[in-house]
Image 1 (tube, rainbow, N blue to C red):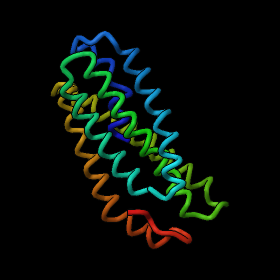
Image 2: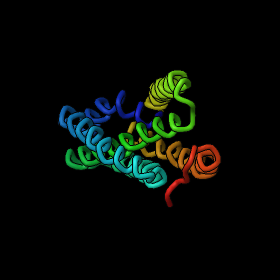
Image 3: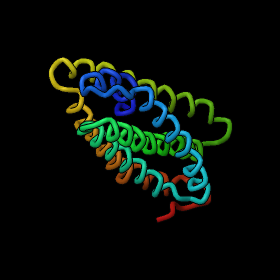
Image 4: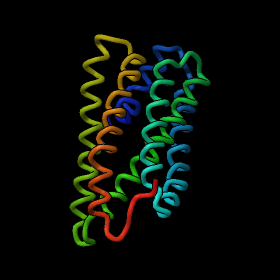
Length: 176
């Protein structure tokens, strides 16, 4: 969630630095894309396509951040925000549903609490980190570097989470 936190907190400053005046439209596109992504991701999750959702969510998030970091005009800025939101909007509910599917119903409260606390921690760490880095490098460059935690997350997901999910998911296997 560090990438999400860096966008939600610093994108207005970045837009001013780049001379983009369409920050309100950015957040409109971001919000609409995030809501829309939840419709299709929920259906795909219910069909057992968790692997597709995680990989596409990571890919969209990474591409969106790179695009945001290299945005040359307001249209690129809007498309980057839309792409990031599609990725984040796919990853967040998919990961929450996945962790909930691995626990007993009476444990879901503590699982959701832990999940949302981790989310908040990621946004907070991003705010502090990007704030520190913004004094030393352009925010666009920070957005490009924010792809690295997404790549790390995808690697951990493939190496650790998928095998764990396979071993612990009641009554099912992940789809290819």
